[in-house]
Length: 400
Image (cartoon, rainbow, N blue to C red; front, top):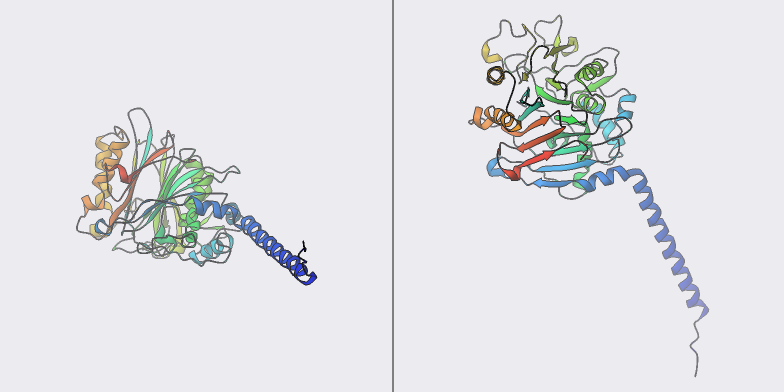
């Protein structure tokens, strides 16, 4: 029986092919390892994104997403390098550190309403309620747990702020890369110490909105990065105010804002930046921090109406945007002595100043309503005024 002979040329070719394939496989493996080494936290974050509800144009419902952020999202480094004094500087930092320079980003302008209040339950639980009023938009509920001495938190972001409008619902993995910026743009949230905070547009009169733009020798923060710092590093309102006072504030999105912070002890404060010497408050560089404490009261409220005493002296009432909602909330809370039966009662009060109830003829909606229980560190989140509808209601807790 004749044995087949394999030619030396063919045998050598097979060896070369095996070597080439092995080299290619090793190169692919090295590339995969390199990508994972550089992007491991980002990849885990992207894989965590899921859609909780889809958009519904007929009801102006945007999509609702949920995301769990892996790692520390370079926020320690952000503060160490002096923060950011403009949205452009913030975008440059995020692009370099989070998207590794691959995906360009943008931060959109805003014209948001919003209402908030603090209250207590008969059992002594502390509540923080918040409406976010805007045009129909996509939102994301963001969980962070950066470790290294920082607090875990859950917060809400508006995806329009990072360049994803309502018509651009992210589907594929690369489409979702922009969402990696989410930790830097919270609108409200609560951390595992029971500290909650929120951001609200403020009006100087006649719908004027001049951004705060402090110019001292302090390091810098934009509006939403200030909230992120508070959620990550503060346990009490006093700690939050102390942290904030160490920075120059630069309002984001070409708008002017004020803020509310509350903690599990029952203390709260509204933070406003107003001019000390410029009576028109038209120069954002001349503003100083004004802290309006809740001392002596079991509740506090905020809308778009500036609360600093005397601010609107000489202004017509129609220049005081948000005064009507503020008066409704304060009347209800005064009548209840700051005590609401439970979280459902707090959500009911939010519904009374929701856009469909308050100004149904307007073009804006209440994108989300949330009641944070600062005592047990939980929250109930409702999308677009779908109060009582289970499919639009989510139970949240930092660290989950």
